[in-house]
Amino acid sequence: MRKPRDFDAELKALENKARDLKTRKVQQLGELVISTGADALSADELAGALVVLAETKDAGKRETWAKRGAAFFQSRARRSAPSTDRNSGGAATQSGGVQPSSGGAGTS
Image (cartoon, rainbow, N blue to C red; front, top):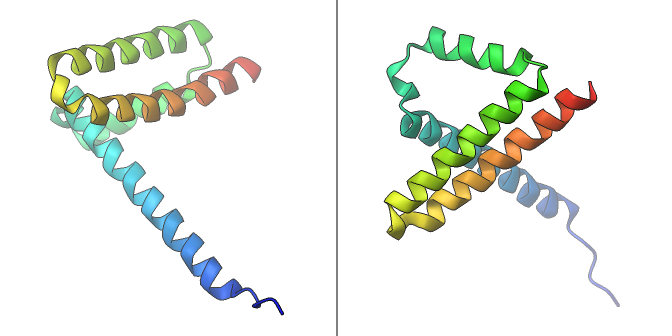
């Protein structure tokens, strides 16, 4: 006889995993803001810049920004070789976040 599944425990585990992923995403975003020097901007300036970025539909501009971001992460990886794994993880996360936005803007 098979043991019945504990759906409540599975749901709780999935909720914990989702919360951990969201926490990691927020932490990585904060690290990105700091590493780019954007923490020197006021919250209003940073929010305004992000709003403009999110509203931009010009695929050429988005492509340019994506290339500049990739170059930023590559240069950081070269400067700090011991923490390459952490930087490349951030680069993958960021490029993953940028790519759907660029693709979405091209299809809109």
